[in-house]
Image 1 (tube, rainbow over the protein chains, first blue to last red):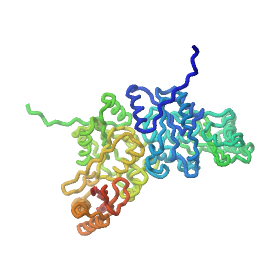
Image 2 (image 1 turned 90 degrees about the vertical axis):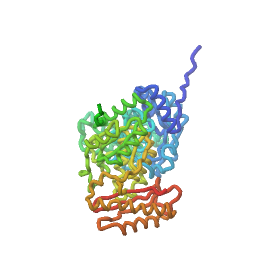
Image 3 (image 1 turned 45 degrees about the vertical axis):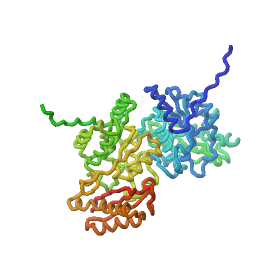
Image 4 (image 1 turned 90 degrees about the horizontal axis):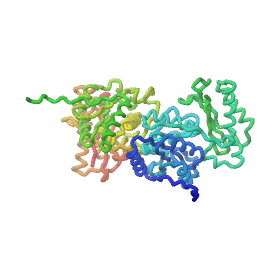
Length: 300
Length: 300
């Protein structure tokens, strides 16, 4: 008899905080020394998320993912209502990766009856939330820090996994965990890219054909800076940023507008003039009409 | 042989977060179903604190107290530097009450190298932090919510105990715990008073003889409102507040100035015009020179 193609079982789906806590508690009671990993996501999973989950499965005995589109990190004019929510497809993908449990709470479960943007308790990582993405989206990192803090209180994992794609988010969460003495450790997993270099993102689904064709421009332009940094030992941020801007001006088209490009310390996010031994974060945003492509690389 | 007077052993003193966590973890490992209670204090303990500790000892199997003067809840012009810190005396008192462990961290341990008032991660309970005490001390409840959140992440108790004396603080922490899904339950213990009615407070030590003599005035004046509420079924906040103001005007002296007096919903802290079945919080502050006497009673 030949074996039939195996169909991965769906992970346990948990909707309430109470169920989620009971699920973790049951595992911990039986496995007091085991490591629990947690992968928070907004769903609409792609290979970038799945790479994160794979790493969590390697490092942890039990992996919990969450699918929750967090209203506190969308301003009124942003895409909260249309953000994709393919929950059944996401559950299948997480099952294939061997995720043990998936937390899929309602907004009511996480925020109660409160307006997530304006009411209730908020967590803010001062000094790291106002620059770069925070300058464009002033509400964003308060929303991220608040929801990650809530989710960590619910799941209480040993490790939390985030993607390097959202570099500033990772810096904010790392500092929040440290400042607040949260007993979880952050792991940051490197960005997964399409063949043409475009960083995977759930929002890439918004791109039309012409936008998709030019979308790798930001990453390609950052590659110019990386080349100067590595091969010509260029350490002046002005020279490196000018190289990115020049590349985009020369290779962009009527669809593309560089929103910002910046070189910052990887920990403090202070702008640096000359890159030292500790390296630096090169990050930026490219506008394609109303769609924002964000990306970053570490110069080190 | 007659027994010699028993000398209570000092509780275990823990200075670092690492030691504190290891202490709790060791207890939990041996007693997985036991209840851990936590009594955060700024030290300079009085009978009010000790009543809270006694209640925690009744309800919990293991009681941790903390002694930490939190810089984030003092503005630059306030009494942070002179706030009393009689740590050895406090340790003895906690030992007599049977407290199991006392967390006595440095400021560096809790806030790192950051300026606690301005830098690092902060927690804010929006909607409950700007009125009453928050109107006089705009930084105060952010400082309280932030440090309580940190301490809860470190100790991870089943129950946290606060005093009703700081009524708004209890409301802020209750809402923070609920909003943030912190897995600890708040217990609020009623105010302990001197024989003349003055609520016990570490800051009463600042009062000179003349100030101490007139200090019960606020509580006495609130008693007037309570009398009207209970015996004359008065439900108009204007009438009740006028009774407090009149009493203070008639019985105060050149030392006394009513800073505010207010009647608010006990949960939302909204000002109420007419007190309903759910009752209300009557709270105020009396200035005696630079010293503030705060007090409250529940009208219910």
